[in-house]
Image (tube, rainbow, N blue to C red; front, side):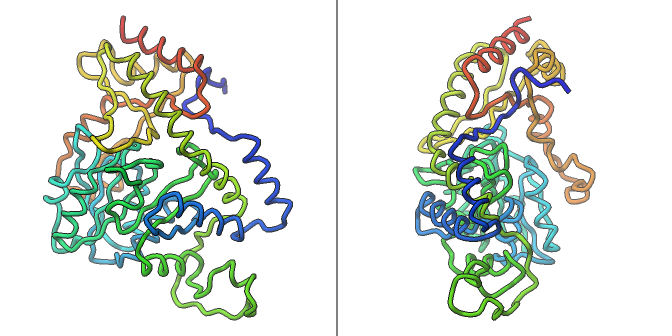
Length: 383
């Protein structure tokens, strides 16, 4: 297959990450160990607010552990935006509960409190905001709504590092627990991996136990303290969600670069916005006043006044060797999830999906690569 002149994404992996992983491999400690513990400690310090951080092998695992620790089970409902990746809703089904899909606010592409309020029933247990593309949901309004109705909040922050709401990082502002992703194309990466963050010690303790087979002792401490490693109990039917030290070694380096990554992405977005301001496009929603956007994705929408359709636009960029993507086809349009939203409509998500396209945006993007994207978009839309 011919490679793209400008790929949709290219990870920013330097010699420091390579050296850290090599050191880990040479140490002989490959699975969960001292690097994973150090990564958890550094990540908790980065988020602040006295949180605990639990390193896991994916954001999906973090979401599953968070819901389980919040007591979600059969008979419960969890409110989820239809505009998200399927993992957000699928973890609800892991626990036998029902996801209640709701439409988005067309101005922010996120959940809004008014729409969520209309979806609350006596079975509602948890609200799951998705900070879509890196833009913060209104956590102040959602927290007030949750408190008024006796509900918990589990953030899907897969896109949201380092996103801030009213000056506080997502992870310490309004949610009972928050799940981050370190997948290869996220704002920082461990290849595969995630982190569950919470300031609630009971949630942290339950998730820590369930993270590795329901064992009542920390896996690393079983091999490092004076008590025999084989003396442990299984107190619940847990999961196999631990992060390896190899992944954590990369994560420690990437976390140290996280703020620089954020500044780079913001600069790239500002240049895109300036270049496209006069075109027949809907530019991505920026942050609310007092918030900061992590810009995981740069998503354009082509209105009816555009000279070509979204699919034709994607084809034109592909002809120019530019990679694009679409985030996302709403869940209510997917075969499996249709049964969970019979009789309800999602006009805002449907309209968004018909006209959205994600442009290349990555930390290692060169000025020449962005120049090529900008020139091509301007040429295609000026015809």
